[in-house]
Image (cartoon, rainbow, N blue to C red; front, side, top):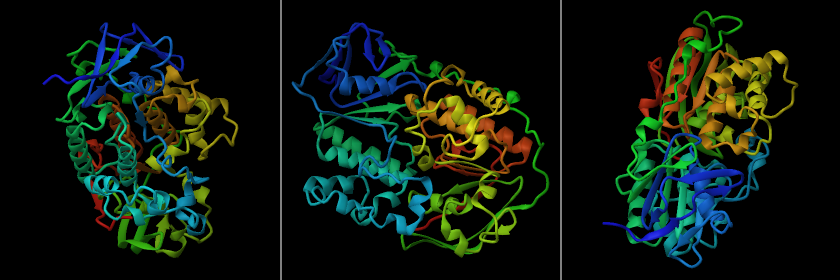
Length: 471
């Protein structure tokens, strides 16, 4: 059944913040119901959403709407702290108890909403029972994403745009989101637009699919599959200056180690040893404690000093500095991504600073470091945007840049916590191939976190699973 139009894009071109989008047809209809916009990273999906949200009244953009004053909300999930306005001053702050005393619970923050029937219904639809009692910055990334969507829907906007709505969700969380969105779309109160970099994620309840490539809206019925043609040549990955990591020495170990967060026991006991050259998957549902466990390894969480934790053969607290540990680890996570989102530094400089183990421009970049960064940018298909600021890129382009930054220093241990967030299908394949090649060639130890087993590099042959309570 053909849906009634909500927006009609009538311009030959649409412009916003210096970016031009060209429709492939004289009129592009965005109907009521559920519209999916798909295309490779950098195709212009997020820009199109911002045009509909903020740029539809520009003189250059002719956009008709069947509602006199439509309310449009765009949710990019780029800053998961946007709900509260609270953001930790530095990455490790969430693990330091005394620094979180003033952080509100969800119930305290949203006291004016949590008593309404609509709030209670949305929380139930998204599987967020009991969320009001939890502090905002101790929610898992999946819980936060579901909470942000539910909170936006309380206001019943005419159009809610969700950019990469599935990232960070375990299978149960994804099913809850799809179920909730399908129910809400059928009610017709709010229309939805889902921006998806992978056509395989298009839900069965979508009413319309728009395909974009290189800032072009392609004609209706275009097959998106041929557009996902990025390839990464693993033979060009730079050789490590010091050669592969030799031996089978212990990289880290936990011996009957409990893991807590905000005075709550997450994991009663962890006994786990990883040696050089081993590649592991770390699995578990949203809120099971995966990120908190990894924080003990990466020297971000002071719990490690009071726990039976050994890193690179030494028990924590026996004299090593956090920088002695961090210089031997390559680390990426959804939370760490937040601390680059506002960065005004060039992409090339951010990648090069991966050699210095800092989040920020605290050390001068040498010519040799800049040259190595340029090689990684070329391999990852980022040369054309090397001089742009990170926060001007799409979410997928940002993630590719941060992956290059993580891999550039040939670490003994790679901790990749959901590293493929926001990547299109072709770039996921390229990133997986790069990680697989480096781990096999350089004998790096690997801990890889994902809710999708198809994203695991082929070298991964061991699994450690968590099934703890929600944070």
